[in-house]
Length: 75
Length: 156
Image (tube, rainbow over the protein chains, first blue to last red):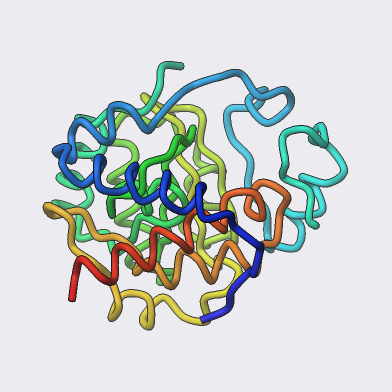
C-alpha cells in the first residue's frame, strides 16, 4: 500500500492512540454525530451541482478556483 | 445546509439498497464509519459506473429528495468522474473514478460492512488520498495511517 512517511512524535502517537480507543467505545451513531460538521467554504459551496468529466478536470478546477487555504490544491 | 446526520446515512443505506445501487463510502466519511475519529463536511461515495447502476442511482437520489434536472440526471447516468451534489437534503460527492483505485470491483471485494454501510477498505481510502496528494490529504494522512495500524491490530 502506498504511504506518506511523515515523522510523528511519540507524544502525538500516544495521544492518537487514546483518541482511537475512545472512539471505539462510542456507538457508530455518536461517532457520526460528532464527525460531520458544516462550515461555509467559499466557491465550493456556491453552486448546487457540478460535474467533471475527469478527475484531472476536477483537480485543475480546485487549483484554479478555490482559495489555497481550503487545502484542495495538490502538494 | 446543516451537517450530515446519522439518520441521513441510514437513508442512503436503505434507499440505495432498495434501488440496488452499488456504491461504497470512501474518503474521510468512509474512514469515520470505520472508526476514525476526525471531522469532515460531506459524504463521499464511490459509485460503480454501469448503465444500470447509473439509472438506479438517479432514481435513489430523487427518492432521497435531490432536485435533479434532466441534464443532471444524464450526467450521473453517464458516470462523470466526479459529481458534487448540493441540491438535496444533504451534500453528497459522487466519485466514479477515485484516484489510486483501479476498478470498482476490486474495492467492492475488499469492502467492509459497518452496520449495513458498505465502506471501502481503509487501505483503499488511504491509497486514494495518497494518489490525490492534496494539501488537506497530506495533513491528515499521518494520523490516518496511524489509525490503520490500530484498526488492523484490533481486527486481527
